Length: 128
Image (cartoon, rainbow, N blue to C red; front, side, top):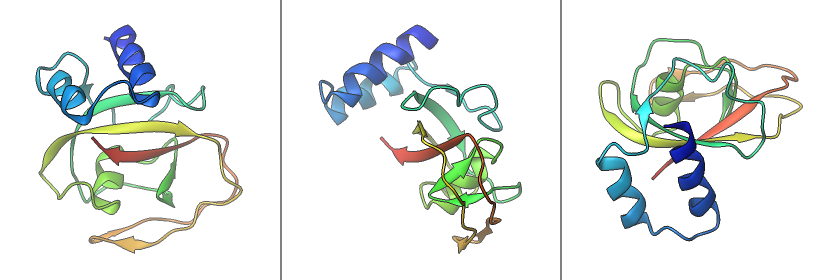
């Protein structure tokens, strides 16, 4: 599965896959896997892209706004970012990004995130 995800991410980043083609691959379960609770062990390479089936949740710890720390709960961050509602499931793109000097907290969509200082691993969520 990881090799297939890497190939799809490669073509997706270069604009070689249309949204329709990408959605078709994801809907057929060729690419996405169930989301881990957080991104531990997956944030070593900036630019790495993953496609996960995420079910939104409102209970769990999240650090940051739009860019989240490695140990933030994916399902809760997805609700905070407005990509899912609690209990709703969709395939989302998770991209490892360069770490920030600070991760501001905020309140969005019924989820409160916590502010955090420098942290060496970060990621962002986006819809497909």
